[in-house]
Each structure stands twice: as structure tokens, then as C-alpha cells.
Image (cartoon, rainbow, N blue to C red; front, side, top):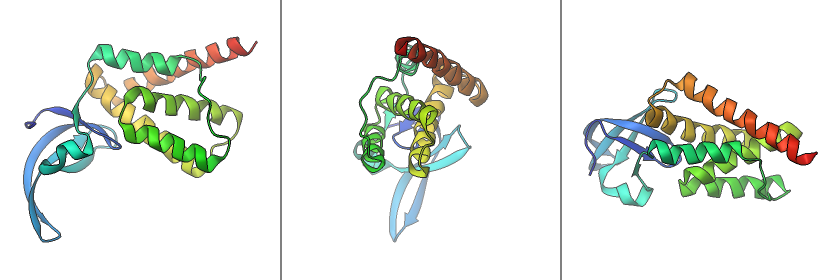
Length: 170
């Protein structure tokens, strides 16, 4: 059980802080919910207390664990992706659903790399934005930085990875 003020991750939505616990009646059923505020877009999400394990709620990563995610973003994109956009979309969606930040970082790396070669489809652009939101929201809390500072950190890290990609292709 979590408490008000705890920093948690709700897979697919990202990381946030529990700001309240409310009882609500939804579809005729009375339940308790964590009210979680996500620092990206100031979004609020209701998380039912009874299904915490089912949806994969977890504590945020440590700074050392988050540093490993940055390393994934820095490494050259080497993962073999499906060539068909529809299969690629499902491939990346499945990685996001795992909630594993290193897998989500690979989605960002894959799609950013692909975007440099050709324009992403609308669906792939949406997945890229979702993956970035998940990583950025947790980094804001882990590193105790502003959203803009974390965006700059990720963009600079990705740029280092792009330089490695170019060097390896030579």
C-alpha cells in the first residue's frame, strides 16, 4: 500500500506522485482510488487501490537504475525491427506494456533512429511520444529536475548516440 506523497509508476501513463486517496462511485461501484499527479502535462490519473498488482504499479527507479536507461538511449540502435509498420507498431507497443524502462528506452531509440531515415507513421509517432512521456515523467522525479531539464538531458544523450551510430556506419 502506498501513501500520499509516494512517487510511483503507473505503466503506460508514467510516473507521478500520489496527491490524494478518494472514494468514488464509478459505474455503480464504490471504490477507493489513488489520485496520482504526473509531472508531464500536469495530468491526473485515478488508480484503483484493489488492482495495484494487476496494473503493475511500482516504486520509481533509483538514480543508478535510471542512469542505465540513459546508457540505453546513448547506445547505437542495434535492435532488429519488423519492416512492416503494423508489425513494428505492435512490437513497440508490447515493449511499452512491459513497463521495463530499458525496453521503453529501446522503443525511443528505435523510433528516433527510424525517424531520421524516414517520416514515422501517425501511430508510430504516438508510440514515440508515449514512450518519451513515460521515461521523462519518471526522470523528473528520480533526478529531481524540471521537465525542461530532463528533456534536454534525454535529447543530449540521444544526440551522443546518433554520433555513435554515424561512426559505426563508417
